Length: 152
Image 1 (cartoon, one colour):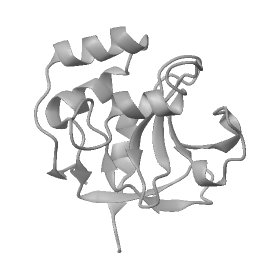
Image 2 (cartoon, one colour):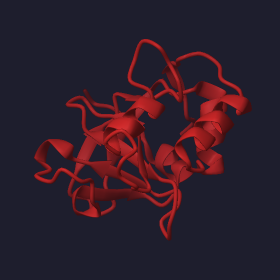
Image 3 (tube, one colour):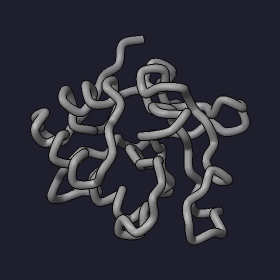
Image 4 (cartoon, one colour):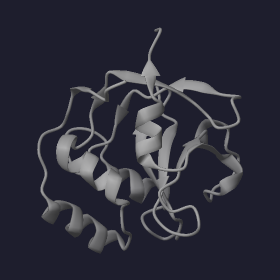
């Protein structure tokens, strides 16, 4: 199935990506950077995803833009997730579900580029850990290729 975005958040440049990476000290996977350059986040036409273990099927409301003044963006979500950058964690939120849980991407370590679902509403810890991350895909490309049309 071809990947389509119903609405996006306007164009960004490679310089925007480099500036965010340098400011927050992480490197985004190439396939995700390509997505940001093409769409800068947005609402995908196909939104339904299932975790690797098959226990959870959910719907992605939208991909966060890299930067934006009017909606939650990747840079601000990263600061929220890392408690204003006081915590070092290799996971960055890149999308939200209907109840504000995050779809995340790993930006370092053995799982670089992997996609996870983070159920923060049921998280009972102050510090983000892998305990509440459920694997979805091994790469951003695999994730978007696995998105299905929503039956909602």
